[in-house]
Amino acid sequence: MAKRKIIEIERDLCNGCGLCTTACMEGALVLDAENKAVLVRELYCDGMGACLAVCPTGALKIIERDSETYDPKKTYQHVLKTRGEEAAGQVHGAMVSGRSELTQWPIQLHLVSPFAPYFQNADLLIAADCTAFALGGFHPDLLKGKKIVIACPKLDDTSNYAAKISEIIKLNDLRSLIVAIMTVPCCSGLVRIVEDAVARAGSTLVVNKVVIGIDGKLAS
Image (tube, rainbow, N blue to C red; front, top):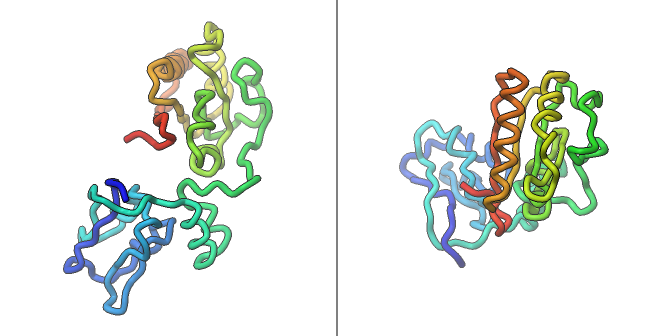
Protein backbone atom coordinates (compact mmCIF):
# COMPACT_ATOMS: atom_id res chain seq x y z
CA MET A 1 0.00 0.00 0.00
CA ALA A 2 1.05 3.59 -0.58
CA LYS A 3 -0.35 7.00 0.31
CA ARG A 4 -2.51 8.35 -2.50
CA LYS A 5 -5.68 10.30 -3.24
CA ILE A 6 -8.90 8.34 -2.84
CA ILE A 7 -12.59 9.00 -2.25
CA GLU A 8 -13.99 9.16 1.27
CA ILE A 9 -17.72 8.87 1.97
CA GLU A 10 -19.38 10.52 4.95
CA ARG A 11 -22.07 7.92 5.45
CA ASP A 12 -24.42 10.08 7.53
CA LEU A 13 -24.62 12.66 4.74
CA CYS A 14 -25.34 10.17 1.94
CA ASN A 15 -29.02 10.29 0.88
CA GLY A 16 -28.84 7.29 -1.44
CA CYS A 17 -29.52 9.21 -4.66
CA GLY A 18 -27.01 7.06 -6.56
CA LEU A 19 -25.73 9.89 -8.77
CA CYS A 20 -22.13 9.17 -7.76
CA THR A 21 -22.40 5.55 -8.88
CA THR A 22 -23.17 6.57 -12.46
CA ALA A 23 -20.72 9.49 -12.52
CA CYS A 24 -17.83 7.19 -11.63
CA MET A 25 -16.58 5.77 -14.93
CA GLU A 26 -14.52 3.22 -13.03
CA GLY A 27 -17.53 1.64 -11.30
CA ALA A 28 -15.88 2.13 -7.92
CA LEU A 29 -19.07 3.15 -6.11
CA VAL A 30 -22.29 1.26 -5.45
CA LEU A 31 -25.22 1.58 -3.05
CA ASP A 32 -25.23 -0.97 -0.25
CA ALA A 33 -28.19 -2.69 1.45
CA GLU A 34 -28.86 0.47 3.49
CA ASN A 35 -28.92 2.61 0.32
CA LYS A 36 -25.61 4.27 1.16
CA ALA A 37 -22.70 4.80 -1.23
CA VAL A 38 -19.69 2.54 -0.60
CA LEU A 39 -16.48 1.69 -2.43
CA VAL A 40 -16.58 -1.64 -4.25
CA ARG A 41 -12.78 -1.96 -4.01
CA GLU A 42 -10.18 0.70 -3.36
CA LEU A 43 -8.14 -0.30 -6.40
CA TYR A 44 -11.07 0.73 -8.65
CA CYS A 45 -10.99 4.34 -7.42
CA ASP A 46 -8.65 6.56 -9.47
CA GLY A 47 -8.88 9.45 -7.00
CA MET A 48 -9.85 11.94 -9.72
CA GLY A 49 -13.14 12.85 -8.00
CA ALA A 50 -15.63 12.95 -10.88
CA CYS A 51 -18.27 11.87 -8.37
CA LEU A 52 -17.85 14.98 -6.22
CA ALA A 53 -19.55 17.28 -8.72
CA VAL A 54 -22.83 15.34 -8.70
CA CYS A 55 -23.22 14.69 -4.96
CA PRO A 56 -26.06 16.94 -3.70
CA THR A 57 -25.23 16.57 0.00
CA GLY A 58 -21.43 16.92 0.12
CA ALA A 59 -21.03 13.36 1.36
CA LEU A 60 -17.99 12.76 -0.84
CA LYS A 61 -14.49 14.18 -0.64
CA ILE A 62 -10.98 13.32 -1.80
CA ILE A 63 -8.43 12.58 0.91
CA GLU A 64 -4.87 11.25 0.99
CA ARG A 65 -4.31 8.02 2.86
CA ASP A 66 -2.68 4.62 2.56
CA SER A 67 -4.61 2.59 0.03
CA GLU A 68 -4.37 -0.05 -2.66
CA THR A 69 -2.94 1.50 -5.82
CA TYR A 70 -5.46 2.26 -8.55
CA ASP A 71 -5.30 -0.60 -11.07
CA PRO A 72 -6.64 0.41 -14.52
CA LYS A 73 -6.42 -3.12 -15.92
CA LYS A 74 -8.47 -4.69 -13.13
CA THR A 75 -10.83 -1.72 -13.22
CA TYR A 76 -11.31 -2.19 -16.96
CA GLN A 77 -12.21 -5.85 -16.44
CA HIS A 78 -14.58 -4.90 -13.61
CA VAL A 79 -16.44 -2.33 -15.74
CA LEU A 80 -16.42 -4.64 -18.78
CA LYS A 81 -18.15 -7.31 -16.70
CA THR A 82 -20.64 -5.02 -14.97
CA ARG A 83 -21.36 -2.34 -17.61
CA GLY A 84 -20.16 -3.62 -20.96
CA GLU A 85 -17.49 -2.80 -23.55
CA GLU A 86 -18.50 0.79 -24.33
CA ALA A 87 -18.40 1.80 -20.65
CA ALA A 88 -15.11 -0.06 -20.15
CA GLY A 89 -13.58 2.07 -22.90
CA GLN A 90 -14.11 5.14 -20.69
CA VAL A 91 -12.09 3.76 -17.77
CA HIS A 92 -9.26 6.10 -16.79
CA GLY A 93 -5.89 4.74 -17.93
CA ALA A 94 -7.23 1.48 -19.34
CA MET A 95 -5.67 1.21 -22.79
CA VAL A 96 -7.20 -1.66 -24.72
CA SER A 97 -4.41 -3.58 -26.44
CA GLY A 98 -4.13 -2.84 -30.15
CA ARG A 99 -6.75 -0.10 -30.09
CA SER A 100 -5.63 3.25 -31.47
CA GLU A 101 -7.53 6.55 -31.37
CA LEU A 102 -5.38 8.08 -34.12
CA THR A 103 -7.62 9.27 -36.98
CA GLN A 104 -5.25 11.22 -39.26
CA TRP A 105 -1.77 11.21 -40.79
CA PRO A 106 0.76 12.83 -40.70
CA ILE A 107 1.01 14.11 -37.14
CA GLN A 108 4.45 15.78 -36.89
CA LEU A 109 4.05 19.56 -36.92
CA HIS A 110 6.64 20.06 -39.68
CA LEU A 111 4.68 17.69 -41.94
CA VAL A 112 1.03 18.61 -41.37
CA SER A 113 -0.76 21.04 -43.67
CA PRO A 114 -2.89 23.83 -42.18
CA PHE A 115 -5.27 23.15 -45.11
CA ALA A 116 -5.84 19.51 -44.15
CA PRO A 117 -9.62 18.96 -44.01
CA TYR A 118 -9.44 16.93 -40.81
CA PHE A 119 -8.56 20.09 -38.84
CA GLN A 120 -11.89 21.74 -39.69
CA ASN A 121 -14.09 22.03 -36.56
CA ALA A 122 -11.65 19.79 -34.69
CA ASP A 123 -10.70 19.50 -31.07
CA LEU A 124 -6.92 19.85 -31.49
CA LEU A 125 -4.31 18.22 -29.27
CA ILE A 126 -0.77 19.58 -29.57
CA ALA A 127 1.45 17.12 -27.75
CA ALA A 128 5.12 17.08 -26.87
CA ASP A 129 6.75 14.00 -28.40
CA CYS A 130 7.42 12.23 -25.09
CA THR A 131 3.89 12.46 -23.69
CA ALA A 132 2.54 9.45 -25.54
CA PHE A 133 5.35 7.30 -24.12
CA ALA A 134 4.98 8.56 -20.55
CA LEU A 135 1.19 8.42 -20.19
CA GLY A 136 -0.02 4.85 -20.44
CA GLY A 137 -3.57 5.93 -21.20
CA PHE A 138 -2.60 8.53 -23.80
CA HIS A 139 -4.98 7.23 -26.48
CA PRO A 140 -8.19 6.87 -24.43
CA ASP A 141 -7.48 9.68 -21.96
CA LEU A 142 -6.10 12.41 -24.25
CA LEU A 143 -6.27 11.52 -27.94
CA LYS A 144 -9.76 10.05 -28.25
CA GLY A 145 -12.03 12.29 -30.34
CA LYS A 146 -9.27 14.75 -31.23
CA LYS A 147 -6.88 15.56 -34.05
CA ILE A 148 -3.22 15.75 -33.08
CA VAL A 149 0.10 17.34 -33.95
CA ILE A 150 3.29 16.46 -32.15
CA ALA A 151 6.46 18.51 -31.62
CA CYS A 152 9.55 18.73 -29.45
CA PRO A 153 10.41 22.27 -28.34
CA LYS A 154 13.99 21.23 -27.50
CA LEU A 155 15.11 19.10 -30.45
CA ASP A 156 13.00 20.46 -33.34
CA ASP A 157 13.68 23.55 -35.38
CA THR A 158 10.75 25.50 -33.95
CA SER A 159 11.33 28.76 -35.84
CA ASN A 160 8.18 28.31 -37.94
CA TYR A 161 6.03 26.50 -35.40
CA ALA A 162 4.08 29.49 -34.06
CA ALA A 163 3.32 30.65 -37.60
CA LYS A 164 2.12 27.22 -38.70
CA ILE A 165 -0.09 26.69 -35.65
CA SER A 166 -1.45 30.18 -36.17
CA GLU A 167 -2.42 29.22 -39.73
CA ILE A 168 -4.13 26.05 -38.50
CA ILE A 169 -6.15 28.17 -36.06
CA LYS A 170 -7.04 30.84 -38.63
CA LEU A 171 -8.04 28.44 -41.41
CA ASN A 172 -10.05 26.02 -39.30
CA ASP A 173 -12.84 26.68 -36.87
CA LEU A 174 -11.28 24.75 -34.01
CA ARG A 175 -13.59 23.82 -31.15
CA SER A 176 -10.87 23.47 -28.54
CA LEU A 177 -7.10 23.45 -28.08
CA ILE A 178 -5.15 21.30 -25.63
CA VAL A 179 -1.38 21.31 -25.14
CA ALA A 180 0.12 18.22 -23.49
CA ILE A 181 3.63 18.54 -22.08
CA MET A 182 5.96 16.81 -19.64
CA THR A 183 7.05 18.28 -16.30
CA VAL A 184 10.62 18.65 -17.62
CA PRO A 185 11.69 22.31 -18.10
CA CYS A 186 12.20 22.21 -21.87
CA CYS A 187 8.57 21.26 -22.47
CA SER A 188 7.23 24.60 -21.25
CA GLY A 189 8.51 26.09 -24.50
CA LEU A 190 5.73 24.31 -26.39
CA VAL A 191 3.09 26.11 -24.33
CA ARG A 192 4.69 29.47 -25.12
CA ILE A 193 4.75 28.63 -28.84
CA VAL A 194 1.05 27.74 -28.82
CA GLU A 195 0.10 30.82 -26.83
CA ASP A 196 2.06 32.95 -29.31
CA ALA A 197 0.24 31.23 -32.19
CA VAL A 198 -3.18 31.94 -30.66
CA ALA A 199 -2.23 35.61 -30.22
CA ARG A 200 -0.99 35.84 -33.83
CA ALA A 201 -4.24 34.34 -35.07
CA GLY A 202 -6.26 36.86 -33.08
CA SER A 203 -8.20 33.94 -31.66
CA THR A 204 -10.16 33.68 -28.41
CA LEU A 205 -9.31 29.98 -28.06
CA VAL A 206 -8.32 29.01 -24.54
CA VAL A 207 -5.05 27.06 -24.34
CA ASN A 208 -5.82 24.17 -22.01
CA LYS A 209 -2.64 22.64 -20.57
CA VAL A 210 -2.15 19.02 -19.51
CA VAL A 211 1.08 18.22 -17.67
CA ILE A 212 2.44 14.67 -17.34
CA GLY A 213 5.11 13.66 -14.87
CA ILE A 214 8.08 11.49 -15.73
CA ASP A 215 6.41 8.85 -13.54
CA GLY A 216 3.63 8.67 -16.13
CA LYS A 217 1.03 10.33 -13.96
CA LEU A 218 -0.99 13.46 -14.65
CA ALA A 219 0.51 16.28 -12.59
CA SER A 220 -1.87 18.23 -10.37
